[in-house]
Amino acid sequence: MNKNQIEGDAKDIGGKIQEKAGKLVGSSEQQVKGMGHQVEGKVQKQVGNMQEAIKDADKRAAKEGNKQ
Image (cartoon, rainbow, N blue to C red; front, side):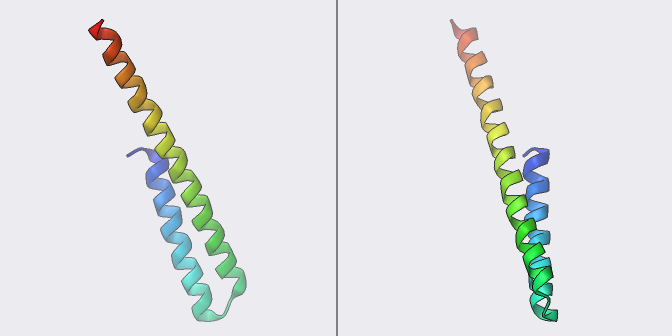
């Protein structure tokens, strides 16, 4: 896992908590902010996933290049 994957998960979880807290206190503003943080976290995690996929592909390509 990389930094973006970890931070993305944290933002997603924090957003879920904020959304639930907003529901408990009847604050639609906090609910919306929480949902926004969830989206932000999911996007950041996907960026991290893509970074990992590229890094893995580079490693495989380098390994294949060394075999030839």
